[in-house]
Length: 489
Image 1 (cartoon, one colour):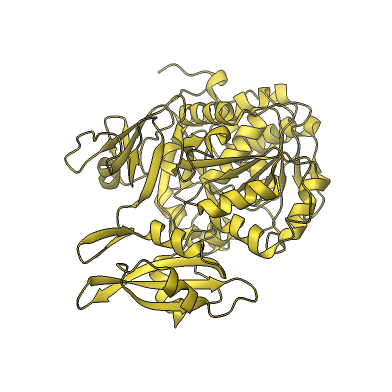
Image 2 (image 1 turned 120 degrees about the vertical axis):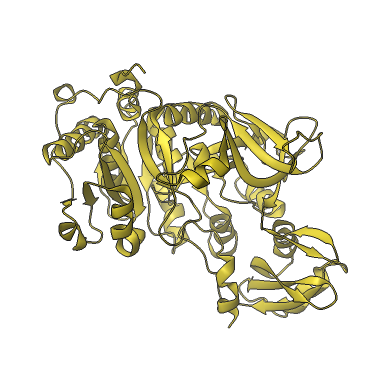
């Protein structure tokens, strides 16, 4: 397999940087200017290599919403290392286990946790920023498309994460396809509140830097108005969020009274957002396009995208496959189903990854002859648009009729007075299974449980509506269904 510095993803990205390619931290005011960005990435690569870490070695990267995490990540790839991306919180709780699993040689942290266990394991513990180096002092490590570039944790991980093997070719192919699907220009600047360790957050970093744009990190989304004002202060053109983020913007921010004149696009992935919420966002910020997307870490990041000009007629769809991917809908016997019929989503193309690190059994189950078996159930219409119904296991049967949690949550979420909702199933003597709903009320809303019960179709047997202060979620905003019962208690 031929290797070349031209095929190193980070090296390729640095060659495409432009005058807008800065990294900024809105919370601290720190800015890495365009002229310093490439030398700092090269400096991180040189620092790792001079510390005795060699090409091919794994290095854990503690990820926070700061420029330093991105510099360390890209520097590791540039030097031929394999960064293992872990959010600081996960590094604190599971870092030692992940180090042992990946046989990592080093750990890098910024201002986050100091890993006392690193020395016991014989690891080098590197911290903080490295000195900048001239770009011509160290070329990018020669790479082949199939060479391992990074280990990315799956987005639903709450304990020790499953790690996806992402290659240089995966990153290049998916990044370029996303840029085309979003029509990104060279003067873009993204506001990023999602962690780099989440494939959605990483894809925003990849695409905007690769296209010559910049990134603004903001860790203050617990105060959403601060983030909205930072979008204006930094003239951001892109905002990315999961459904929880948009629900917070609509229910607990001043987005209706804070104009966002620089914003060109909203990006939404990480699960289904209620159509009513999408319509409301479009009305509030009508000058910005709204991109609904679908993806998985196992496909590097993005699989499909709903073009904003088709949003009106295809509202609720996850869009069409990216232009270098093929999507098929197969039944349980792995036969392709006709348009409109449900089955499992299979994906093939250059962004489909190699499998899970050190987990051949699960790799064999999910990856087959270049195809990724996503585990998501969906249908495809005559126009090739994908309609996600939920994941295997995210369904229940009431009196023998299958019902998806996603459909229930969309219905309940559209009920006046409901801020957020999650659904689970409980045993029922007559129906077999029935619904248990967990509802976060909107501010000032009353009689929410009764409103929800009135909104449910008669054939949806519901045993309980729990009004709760918040839903248990991962750091990426995904509801942890296994913890819902404890939340109600």
